[in-house]
Image (cartoon, rainbow, N blue to C red; front, side):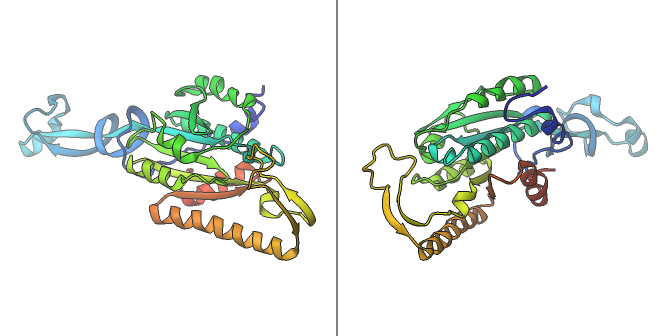
Length: 300
């Protein structure tokens, strides 16, 4: 039985053996599945420590006491639950010229959400619309809540413009030192999204950017005289709309500018230890998850 129009059981079954990996040492919440370097109360043994006043006497190892006549307590691995937060760009540029980018972005959102909840993490999806980041369905914990919440993607509309900077900076629950933030967008925006990323890093969040482009974004087929209309422009006279005669030199310049654009994002992310993936919407989501993200250790 299909879970939503975006994903189905066959797709989810391929995700069962994978999980998102949070590299940094983070606090998170008790009761999760991420091992930390600190010690907690799980059943997995970690080390011994000489007893000190105030330690739990129930953890004293009496076998060691009989050998060394000193009190040692057992230390166990601490496991934490992380908060995986996904910011999804819902601007018009993610929808046009067809639904390719939007469908890819929603499918990836659902896949990452599933990887999180099956690893006992909390998940939330924020829809970037204009200058706000709307909450899709609250905090998701567990697969039943995931199925109920992620189904709301089926009716999602991609329209208007988006301000990544203001929407993320204004998010009341971006989190602090407790997990991974994923931003899914084409990043074709005039907003200062880099400031938003720096803010998340300041909050000690692990950050990942996924740029979704359409085949037309990568290799436009325009030729001759035409009027180029910015999909996010509300006024036909908007200065972002252009009339020009497209030639081979224009297309070559466009491709060079696109490469520079992607290179700038990649360089910025590399300088800050942020994972960055640029994908084309006609490629399978599985290729991103199980090939590229697996190679970088983002998915395990």
